[in-house]
Length: 492
Image 1 (tube, rainbow, N blue to C red):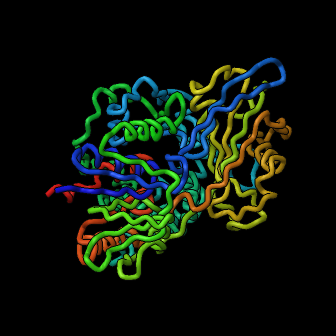
Image 2: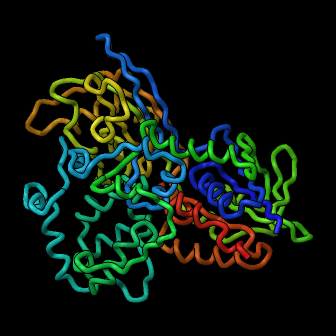
Image 3: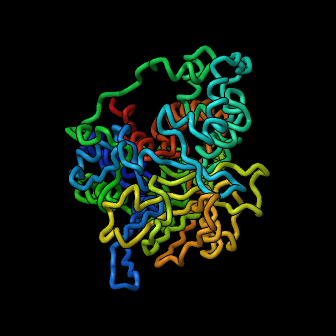
């Protein structure tokens, strides 16, 4: 069969899709279309030169999007092996302070709280009162999942099993760190399926379920070489030139494939199935493309806007998406240090809810601790990244450097100390990412099952696959895995 496959979207999922399709169908012509002049989507790594005023200069790597990966995603380990990126990997071992120390900043309080990282640490204040009682009570709590429900919000789930204080303090902070969303809107089964499974496995108790072995769902069709060996005892990892090295290596590889054509800076105006049953993509320049198969990695609402009325699909606009402001800050190193040793901190939902009166900060990453190997002359500089927005309403006043520094000074000063005023940063950069993280709401898995069944029949007849963060999961591993699986039903 003379396959002509079009991949819509040049982010990580689109690049992964084109990469794996070119290997699965070496005889096919694969065209990747991306409206931006740059491939990589939300992933963007950049080096900047920073001077401290004392003759010290450093080349500092800044990330506008994701900055670390966990070593449990075999789909990404496979890309590292196949793309020859092994020597560019930098790791954070599980024994490091960046791996062991993660913090919470409770709204309306000063300073940071260390999250438990060992059995003994849960018995230390304040975890002894803030965390431990809720966990100890959970296994003796009755099974309380309402009969017949197949999904609920993360907040509802946590509230049911651990109580409202735990749900707001720990559940909402976890959701802020991954989805930049309101835990009261996020589907627990779509976002954290392991929690739902633990409750089932533990006869109604999450804690009991966590102590019992889970059924293995691992797929072994990954060509990872010896990469897993270097990931032993690793907490997180990245690359010498940031996560952008991964998307950059994918783009370079695809440019060198004779059966792949990359079309950046190219917009699609519509797509659908025409009267003779052919698939048709209309570009903004009026050019028509008639592929045999299409992979869409576009945000689902964007895809919905492009579909012709006769080719519409269900549930593409069911979920909202979070917008995030990323503020990169580089300071001159000071003594004492500006922040404690560790990965960073998250901020739970304020007791009064999300409002303009709140700082709007979701959390802060201590980049200099977690990935110091990316930068030169690190002893003289401190790098942090502040995440803002999500469910928090944000105005320009919230994101001003002076305002952010004022709030960071409260966060990074212990209650018994005088308030530490952070110095002016040597370098600051603000990036606004609009609708960058989809929020799968309760019922998402069922809706995506309906979408999948609709694509398999009717006018599309299995010729269009819809994948990406809005379908399967928002982690980098999820995006790469989605790209790896496209086209498996086109083999015949």
